[in-house]
Amino acid sequence: MSIPFTLDRTVGSIVADDYRTAAVFNAHGIDFCCKGGRTIAEVCRAKAIEPDTLEAEIRQAIERDGGTADDVKQWPLSRLIEHIERVHHRYVESRSTTLMQFLNKLCTVHGDRHPELFAIREEFHACAQAMAAHMKKEELVLFPFINQLEKARLHDLPAPTPHFGTVENPITMMEHEHDAEGERFRRIAELSGNYTNPPDGCTTYGTAYAMLREFEEDLHRHIHLENNILFPRAKALEKELRHATA
Image 1: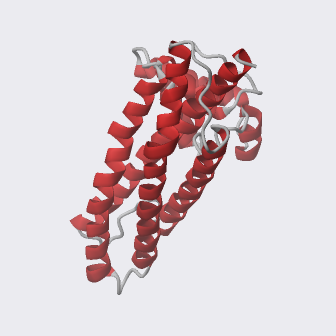
Image 2: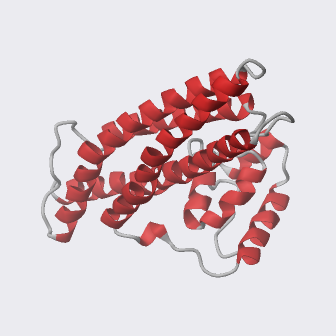
């Protein structure tokens, strides 16, 4: 395996090194995005998995996939931010509207026999609203400041001083909101039987559940890029710049 695997490494750092490892953690129900700060030792104890077994599965996943993972950790922060906005933020915006239309239809047609659909709709509607506000804060406040930090390093300028004091403050808020949406989708998955179309479910039912599963998978990737790559690098860069001018 090309990436170091030790018991004290965090799950998030391993996925940050090679996103192909995410499939293994997903298969064991291990959260690598919102709870990516847990170590291999901790998750193996929690899931009753032998570390050697987990390491072997990760190695096999990387070898089976082949090729070389695109190392987003090496991207300039501005490129990573542009990718998050263009790929993940725009996905959330477009998919949220479509999914709400599907869920409204399901509640109308199947709600009498499947009352859990109303709870799923309520949870997803809350998620869509929360994510809209969350992404707006990132695009208008946090991301522009991170871009300013990168420009300061490129041009040998002092660290900018934001009204929020330090980049750690909005990052802490964003991470808290990530946790909330991760928990919300865990509830949606439970309510839907892990997105299982019931025997009396129609094509629309199956499509809506498939879209919900896809939305959750994109959310995991989205949160991973921020929690495990963008945010740690932004905090380290701010400290580097402030130390240089101290």
